[in-house]
Image 1: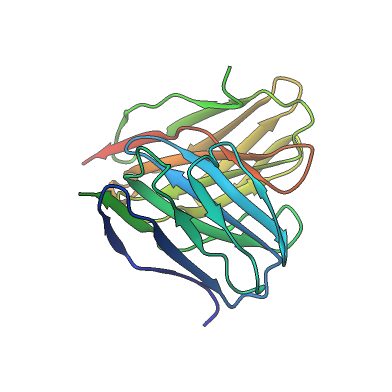
Image 2 (image 1 turned 30 degrees about the vertical axis):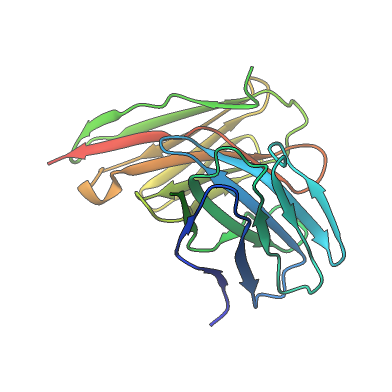
Length: 112
Length: 111
């Protein structure tokens, strides 16, 4: 079945550590997105990529980095520069065109 | 001013009643409008999308769009306890394919 796979489902990070969240899709979608969701809040855009080897900053990119070396994959690295990384992270993809997004199941990141 | 605004709720609705959710947006060039439902701890799932002014119905759900007033709404008829969730309004603005989300409205359907 086609879909988006995010891993891990839960992730714990120590202070000062970089961690990478995985996002893989087999939907042949061109565009991929990373969102952050804090408790009781909506989704805020971190980074997005419309095509391979190209990506743009979203509204809250500071402290995060991404790569898009393959169409299927869009990993997100949460760096030590991100001071408050505890949140629910959602990856999404879409074909070019306004048809809404397909979301992954999310990664819940907690700083310990 | 936030780009997409929703009342955070909670909106408490008796079972069988109509739940009415509202959303306003600031970018007059916005083209496409979406309603997502999100259960606690889960990812959002698409309920409806609407592009043209007027009403669009799908089962118990009706989306209403008024571009002149920059307003989109969602009606849930015959509300069920399983409809208890957070409903996210999202907009694709004039430039690009980025979805901008509102903060969500939490709906509680009481038996």
